[in-house]
Image 1 (tube, rainbow, N blue to C red):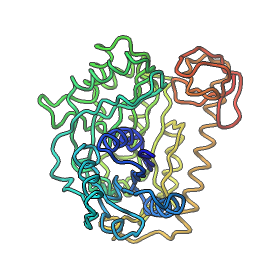
Image 2 (spheres, helix red, strand yellow):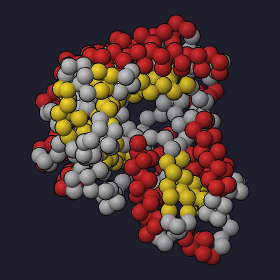
Image 3 (cartoon, rainbow, N blue to C red):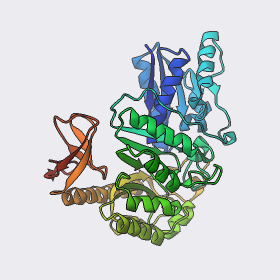
Image 4 (cartoon, helix red, strand yellow):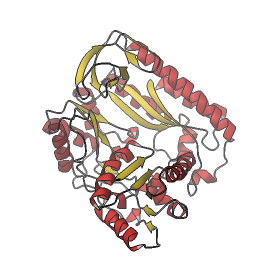
Length: 417
């Protein structure tokens, strides 16, 4: 058997899984399971540990290697698990040498399990062109940035990913062109803190500059999509591209986190409630049909009912369609973990209320789509996605194609034709 990669957490991990598989198999590893972990919450780490135990029971002869954000921040914890054979750092996992070292360690029977370098010492980022993407796969991700220079008080991710670093623009454009030539209809730009793109590059280009370069130099590209951004760092070129190029999809996911100014300050966020609402209004003015999503945290330390109500209100005031709700989870080593905590039952109840509001917002958007004709990217033999990332029930269409479909209804979660 070869190398199986099990990824948790963000889209970036899903992209990196392909690099991991390629490099690990290239190093000669076989009958190996690589766990690409997430550290965003305590629950995410617990899920990783449970999966390791389950996979070892199912495949007792397979070697298990743990990498990803949780491996970077909690290497010893995973190395102490009897089921784990090796722990590989989050930057190391993208390098062929780390997997050759793992193979050599297994061959020699080396006792040391941990191979985790200092993530904060990493200053550059190399592009990874993935030959393993199947031709015609509808949507593929291109990693243009990694790491984060900000220190939100609730977030452990900078210590798992390191400081912000960017792939040079020319390399990104070339990778996009290659993927389009292979038949991929939609490209998604991804990173940990996308709107910090370019600050470490000569000339300090911005995300908007990169976006315009891709659209200009790859005219054959059908659809370009941008994943999660920090609204306070959105630049004029990005807004101009949103307003002026139909190939840039009318869908953005925003890192808002909360709707109360004091909570935002305690989170060490760099925007206010008023700025978040104004930015969303600007997006709706520039692209009236745009669909907006947002990350929101329920039950951040010191959050009162009144403060939480402002997060609930933000869904309507910002015109949000998609919500990614996080029940607050204290991460060891973060400042928020030392603040007065909200009771777990209250956190759970607030998260539930946010999800209910989010589900209602999605249903309203689905209802508003009825009668419109949308360009739908066919993902599989039963589902596609509109320009706005709304799922559509389809049948009998060729995956990878983009077709115009008139929306006839919805089932509360997906559009129907």
